Length: 372
Ligand code: HMG
Ligand code: MG
Image (tube, rainbow, N blue to C red; front, side, top):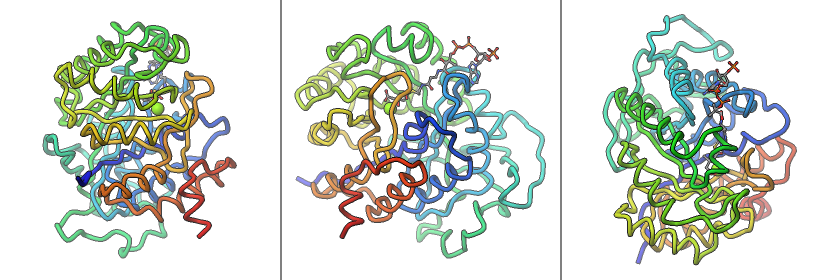
């Protein structure tokens, strides 16, 4: 049986870069997103409106968002750009950067200046299909960088173009108290309380909301035995609050095939539908692909991954990056899934960004493709 369409959420620019020790220039982040946009991937997690003293690498997420709105990257299909928000302050900063708080309109004429944010966000409510409403952007601000030619920024056969991109937010909570405290300085209950007004405010602006439940298959502080029932309960709570989907995250990479199976059983047993779930695997123990296949077999059709296997979580010591997008694509395509993502382009980007960051390319498939 064919796996059909599978949605990849490319989290490299956020999860991938947040843990890098040396400061990554804004231009490199933007270039990474611009290149990713050209691969056909429809979802890119582009930044994080968290406290800069906690995660300094994400401090310029306003500039990233502002840039994406002012200069939508050339892309073969509309893209949803996602930003993490940990609290109302984060959401307010996100809204300010996106121009929905009635920020004054200023003009900008070149790619090196901060572009004018549009005056409105997504104009239509998203459905379960993963389709998002358009971002309105100024016609004269459709180019992100001077090397973007009109050839790179085509209007699609269906009439869509980069101007129908959208922006989304992700909120996050965790399945163990110690991780919640370490990551967001609050208890699980407090974090769920924080989530409520974020969801309502985002929804009132027609912004799609993603939820994350961290440490679903193991916790750096409490060990590998995280309760699947607790993960299911938290996932259900986020969905009831109004989240459009929940990404269940193996932060530490401690997940195995049987544990993933058990977790999915608990999630489905709690009445949660596969279409409302995404799986987010870190590959610390090299089990991410196996776990993804278990998810696929159980009907999951959305997976998070990071180009070049970039990343790690600042609050999960020793955890390595997400499953590499190139590796996940190779695996999914071999099983007959369609992703719409160009694996060769992804492999080139993995190689490029690894060099930019001065780190080894962690995608085995990426390296194999480039060695051919
Ligand atoms: P806190 O220190 O408890 O917050 O942090 P606070 O309300 O007491 O405020 C302290 C200071 O932070 C104040 O500034 C606030 O204004 C400021 P001061 O008065 O000291 O100058 N502040 C903010 N500044 C900017 N943006 C904000 C913000 N909020 C407060 N949003 C907080 C609480 C949640 C903010 C903090 O703990 C935090 O930022 N945590 C985020 C940690 C993080 O980014 N972790 C990584 C992302 S999650 C992840 O990687 C997991 C995932 O990939 C899935 C998986 O693999 O598990 C998604
Ligand atoms: Mg993660």
